[in-house]
Image (cartoon, rainbow, N blue to C red; front, side, top):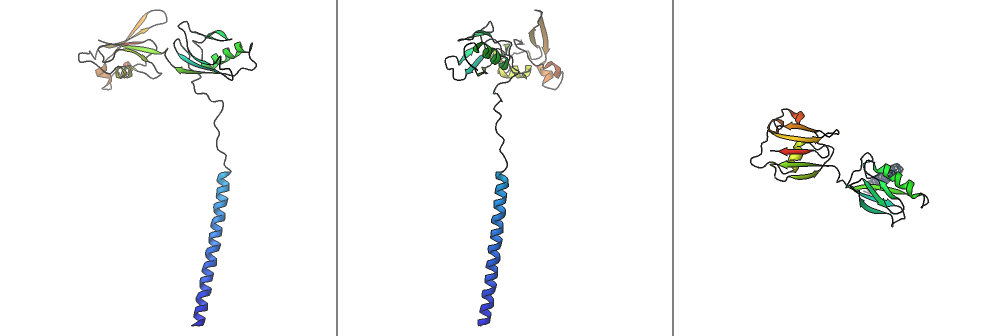
Amino acid sequence: MKMAGNRLWRQAAVVALAGALLSGALWAQAGESDKREGSTPTAAPNPESKPHDSEYLIGPEDVLSINVWKEPEISRTIPVRLDGRISLPLAGEVQAAGRTPDQLEQEITTKLKNYISDPEVSVMVQQIRSKRFNVLGQVVRPGSYLLTNSTTVLDAIAMAGGFRDFAKQKSIYVLRRNPDGTEGRFPFNYKDVVKGKNTEENIRLQPKDTVVVP
Protein backbone atom coordinates (compact mmCIF):
# COMPACT_ATOMS: atom_id res chain seq x y z
CA MET A 1 0.00 0.00 0.00
CA LYS A 2 2.84 2.38 0.87
CA MET A 3 4.56 1.80 -2.49
CA ALA A 4 1.29 2.37 -4.35
CA GLY A 5 0.77 5.59 -2.46
CA ASN A 6 4.27 6.82 -3.33
CA ARG A 7 3.70 5.96 -6.98
CA LEU A 8 0.43 7.95 -7.03
CA TRP A 9 2.13 10.90 -5.32
CA ARG A 10 4.95 10.94 -7.90
CA GLN A 11 2.42 10.83 -10.78
CA ALA A 12 0.48 13.74 -9.27
CA ALA A 13 3.68 15.74 -8.86
CA VAL A 14 4.66 15.13 -12.50
CA VAL A 15 1.20 16.24 -13.71
CA ALA A 16 1.37 19.38 -11.57
CA LEU A 17 4.86 20.23 -12.84
CA ALA A 18 3.81 19.72 -16.46
CA GLY A 19 0.78 21.95 -15.92
CA ALA A 20 2.95 24.70 -14.43
CA LEU A 21 5.40 24.54 -17.33
CA LEU A 22 2.56 24.65 -19.90
CA SER A 23 0.93 27.62 -18.14
CA GLY A 24 4.23 29.50 -18.10
CA ALA A 25 4.73 28.87 -21.81
CA LEU A 26 1.24 30.15 -22.60
CA TRP A 27 1.80 33.31 -20.54
CA ALA A 28 5.09 33.93 -22.34
CA GLN A 29 3.42 33.54 -25.75
CA ALA A 30 0.63 35.92 -24.73
CA GLY A 31 3.21 38.46 -23.59
CA GLU A 32 5.08 38.26 -26.89
CA SER A 33 1.77 38.61 -28.78
CA ASP A 34 0.86 41.71 -26.75
CA LYS A 35 4.24 43.24 -27.50
CA ARG A 36 3.84 42.61 -31.21
CA GLU A 37 0.34 44.09 -31.22
CA GLY A 38 1.48 47.02 -29.12
CA SER A 39 4.32 47.76 -31.51
CA THR A 40 1.92 48.35 -34.41
CA PRO A 41 1.50 52.13 -34.76
CA THR A 42 -2.01 53.52 -34.98
CA ALA A 43 -2.63 55.69 -38.01
CA ALA A 44 -2.96 59.28 -36.91
CA PRO A 45 -5.50 61.59 -38.59
CA ASN A 46 -4.07 63.74 -41.31
CA PRO A 47 -3.89 67.28 -39.90
CA GLU A 48 -4.01 68.69 -43.43
CA SER A 49 -7.42 67.15 -44.20
CA LYS A 50 -10.23 69.69 -44.36
CA PRO A 51 -13.96 69.27 -43.71
CA HIS A 52 -15.01 71.05 -46.88
CA ASP A 53 -14.88 70.05 -50.53
CA SER A 54 -11.83 71.83 -51.92
CA GLU A 55 -13.31 71.73 -55.43
CA TYR A 56 -16.59 73.42 -54.52
CA LEU A 57 -17.12 76.84 -56.08
CA ILE A 58 -18.62 79.31 -53.63
CA GLY A 59 -21.71 81.17 -54.82
CA PRO A 60 -23.87 84.11 -53.74
CA GLU A 61 -25.90 83.50 -50.55
CA ASP A 62 -23.68 80.61 -49.44
CA VAL A 63 -22.89 80.88 -45.72
CA LEU A 64 -19.19 80.72 -44.88
CA SER A 65 -17.46 80.02 -41.59
CA ILE A 66 -14.20 81.97 -41.53
CA ASN A 67 -11.75 81.35 -38.71
CA VAL A 68 -8.54 83.29 -38.17
CA TRP A 69 -6.45 81.62 -35.47
CA LYS A 70 -6.22 83.68 -32.28
CA GLU A 71 -8.19 86.50 -33.92
CA PRO A 72 -11.79 86.21 -32.67
CA GLU A 73 -12.54 89.79 -33.75
CA ILE A 74 -12.03 88.78 -37.38
CA SER A 75 -13.40 85.22 -37.24
CA ARG A 76 -17.09 84.98 -38.06
CA THR A 77 -19.89 83.22 -39.91
CA ILE A 78 -20.95 85.34 -42.86
CA PRO A 79 -23.17 85.00 -45.96
CA VAL A 80 -21.84 85.81 -49.40
CA ARG A 81 -23.61 88.90 -50.74
CA LEU A 82 -25.52 88.86 -54.01
CA ASP A 83 -22.59 90.67 -55.64
CA GLY A 84 -20.40 87.67 -54.71
CA ARG A 85 -18.30 89.50 -52.13
CA ILE A 86 -17.79 89.44 -48.38
CA SER A 87 -16.42 92.06 -46.01
CA LEU A 88 -14.00 91.29 -43.18
CA PRO A 89 -12.21 93.51 -40.64
CA LEU A 90 -8.69 94.41 -41.83
CA ALA A 91 -9.11 92.34 -45.02
CA GLY A 92 -11.85 94.60 -46.37
CA GLU A 93 -13.84 93.58 -49.45
CA VAL A 94 -12.99 90.10 -50.76
CA GLN A 95 -14.38 88.32 -53.81
CA ALA A 96 -15.77 84.97 -52.64
CA ALA A 97 -18.13 83.78 -55.40
CA GLY A 98 -16.46 81.72 -58.08
CA ARG A 99 -13.62 80.66 -55.82
CA THR A 100 -12.96 77.46 -53.91
CA PRO A 101 -12.60 77.58 -50.11
CA ASP A 102 -8.84 77.05 -50.49
CA GLN A 103 -8.54 79.96 -52.92
CA LEU A 104 -10.52 82.21 -50.60
CA GLU A 105 -8.31 81.19 -47.67
CA GLN A 106 -5.24 82.26 -49.65
CA GLU A 107 -6.82 85.59 -50.64
CA ILE A 108 -7.79 86.45 -47.05
CA THR A 109 -4.38 85.34 -45.77
CA THR A 110 -2.62 87.62 -48.24
CA LYS A 111 -4.72 90.62 -47.23
CA LEU A 112 -4.24 89.99 -43.49
CA LYS A 113 -0.44 89.74 -43.78
CA ASN A 114 -0.36 93.54 -43.91
CA TYR A 115 -1.65 93.62 -40.32
CA ILE A 116 -1.02 90.19 -38.73
CA SER A 117 2.18 88.16 -38.60
CA ASP A 118 1.71 84.74 -40.22
CA PRO A 119 -2.12 84.63 -40.15
CA GLU A 120 -3.70 81.16 -40.21
CA VAL A 121 -7.05 81.23 -41.99
CA SER A 122 -9.59 78.46 -42.56
CA VAL A 123 -12.75 78.76 -44.65
CA MET A 124 -15.62 76.28 -44.54
CA VAL A 125 -18.88 76.35 -46.49
CA GLN A 126 -21.36 76.04 -43.65
CA GLN A 127 -24.52 76.27 -45.76
CA ILE A 128 -24.92 75.89 -49.53
CA ARG A 129 -27.64 78.27 -50.68
CA SER A 130 -26.42 79.30 -54.11
CA LYS A 131 -27.08 76.02 -55.94
CA ARG A 132 -30.86 75.71 -56.21
CA PHE A 133 -33.53 74.58 -58.66
CA ASN A 134 -37.27 75.15 -58.90
CA VAL A 135 -40.25 72.82 -59.21
CA LEU A 136 -43.49 74.38 -60.45
CA GLY A 137 -46.98 73.18 -61.33
CA GLN A 138 -48.95 70.16 -60.22
CA VAL A 139 -46.77 68.88 -57.40
CA VAL A 140 -47.54 68.70 -53.69
CA ARG A 141 -44.85 71.19 -52.63
CA PRO A 142 -43.82 73.53 -55.46
CA GLY A 143 -40.88 75.77 -54.66
CA SER A 144 -37.11 76.19 -54.62
CA TYR A 145 -34.83 73.35 -53.50
CA LEU A 146 -31.13 72.91 -52.79
CA LEU A 147 -29.25 71.20 -55.60
CA THR A 148 -26.64 68.48 -55.21
CA ASN A 149 -24.34 67.13 -57.89
CA SER A 150 -26.55 64.10 -58.47
CA THR A 151 -30.07 65.58 -58.39
CA THR A 152 -32.14 64.31 -61.34
CA VAL A 153 -35.65 65.13 -62.55
CA LEU A 154 -37.01 62.12 -60.67
CA ASP A 155 -35.26 63.31 -57.52
CA ALA A 156 -36.78 66.77 -57.95
CA ILE A 157 -40.31 65.38 -58.25
CA ALA A 158 -39.78 63.27 -55.12
CA MET A 159 -38.42 66.24 -53.18
CA ALA A 160 -41.51 68.22 -54.18
CA GLY A 161 -43.75 65.55 -52.66
CA GLY A 162 -44.89 63.87 -55.87
CA PHE A 163 -47.77 64.70 -58.19
CA ARG A 164 -51.16 66.19 -57.57
CA ASP A 165 -54.18 64.30 -58.86
CA PHE A 166 -54.42 65.94 -62.29
CA ALA A 167 -50.72 66.26 -63.13
CA LYS A 168 -49.85 65.50 -66.75
CA GLN A 169 -47.08 63.03 -66.03
CA LYS A 170 -46.21 62.53 -69.71
CA SER A 171 -45.75 66.26 -70.43
CA ILE A 172 -43.20 67.34 -67.83
CA TYR A 173 -40.29 69.46 -69.00
CA VAL A 174 -37.17 71.19 -67.66
CA LEU A 175 -36.39 74.81 -68.48
CA ARG A 176 -32.72 75.80 -68.50
CA ARG A 177 -31.15 79.21 -69.08
CA ASN A 178 -28.23 78.92 -71.50
CA PRO A 179 -25.07 81.06 -71.19
CA ASP A 180 -26.07 83.04 -74.31
CA GLY A 181 -29.36 84.05 -72.71
CA THR A 182 -31.56 81.63 -74.64
CA GLU A 183 -33.73 79.06 -72.86
CA GLY A 184 -33.50 75.31 -73.42
CA ARG A 185 -36.40 72.93 -72.92
CA PHE A 186 -35.93 69.23 -72.06
CA PRO A 187 -38.99 66.92 -72.17
CA PHE A 188 -39.55 64.32 -69.47
CA ASN A 189 -42.14 61.55 -69.73
CA TYR A 190 -42.51 60.22 -66.20
CA LYS A 191 -44.58 57.21 -67.30
CA ASP A 192 -41.85 56.04 -69.68
CA VAL A 193 -38.89 56.70 -67.41
CA VAL A 194 -40.26 54.75 -64.45
CA LYS A 195 -40.79 51.80 -66.83
CA GLY A 196 -37.17 51.96 -67.94
CA LYS A 197 -37.87 53.67 -71.28
CA ASN A 198 -36.11 56.83 -72.50
CA THR A 199 -34.08 57.00 -69.31
CA GLU A 200 -31.84 59.65 -70.91
CA GLU A 201 -34.68 62.10 -70.23
CA ASN A 202 -33.92 61.80 -66.51
CA ILE A 203 -31.19 64.42 -66.77
CA ARG A 204 -29.09 65.81 -63.93
CA LEU A 205 -30.31 69.24 -62.99
CA GLN A 206 -28.16 72.35 -63.04
CA PRO A 207 -28.39 75.47 -60.88
CA LYS A 208 -31.48 77.56 -61.63
CA ASP A 209 -33.17 74.80 -63.67
CA THR A 210 -36.96 74.76 -63.42
CA VAL A 211 -38.94 71.51 -63.51
CA VAL A 212 -42.47 72.21 -64.79
CA VAL A 213 -45.26 69.72 -64.12
CA PRO A 214 -48.36 70.80 -66.13
